Image (cartoon, rainbow, N blue to C red; front, side, top):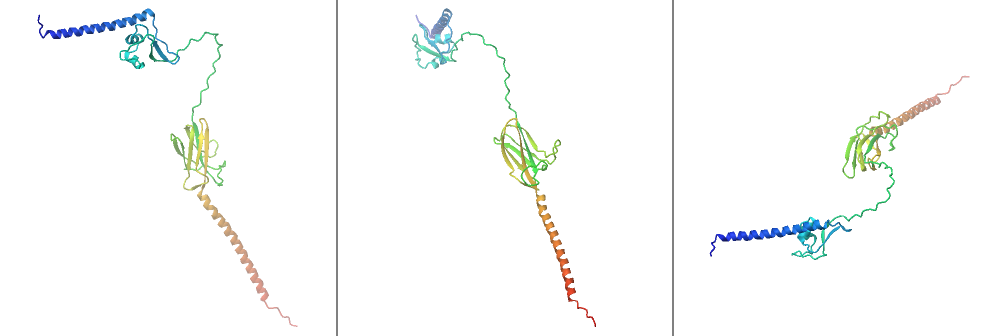
Amino acid sequence: MRYNDSQKPMNTRRFLLIILLLLGGAIFGLTAQASEATQGQGYATPTPRPDGRIIYVVQPGDNCISISLLNGITLEQLRALNSNLDADCKLIAGQELLLGLGGPAVASPTPGPAPTPTPIQPTPTPFTGTTEICVLIFDDQNGDALHQELEPGIEGGAVSVSNSAGTFSQSQTTTSAPDPTTGLAAPVCFSDVPEGIYTISAGVPDTYNPTMLMTYTLEVKAGDRAAVAFGAQSRLQTVEQPAETSGSKSGWLGAIGGISILAGLGLGWYALRLRKPKSRYLR
């Protein structure tokens, strides 16, 4: 009996179909076996050991496919977790396989007497606010580098506040207007300043000379209020003082000169009296 060439593809297709059916049946059988083992034995996924590892102990008749299906992991995951498995995935009863990692098993505590309820005290809320820095440039009229209560503020000065972290930097201009409440010199204030280390710098108008160092560094805490004062003295006031001294010296010199002139006139009159001839009386 002869077969023509058209029948060869048909035979090849049948052969491949038979192989696929056999493979499908084998996989179905393994799945059914794993399912029956789960139902019959009441299988539960192993719990983590004290070191956190989840271990499965190989049972007789187990294979890698049934174990992966039984524990809900893929065959690739099983191989990756167990590098000692060979290419054929041969198993021995009693062999331990790593299924994953988890937290250690927690033992159920033994019931004891119920504790007496304790009233819950309110937890204090930590303070995370900001601070305030106030800066004054005052007219140091007596030049002692100390702010006296009645010394006023200076108009047109410049102050700046910046922290060492470079996250805060502000500047303002000072005023000579007094505080409306106290009537004293009023500083300029920087609000909502985060706590940290700050450098305060001040610059005075051209008509003033500083009487102290015009830079100051300080550390502030949240909720605190810091105040810094810088002093400067007017140049006009400094120049007028020698003029007053010269005027007073000129007055004294004028008085001494007047006295000298009067003394000279008196001496001249006395000399003329001495040179006058004496009177002769006739007998």
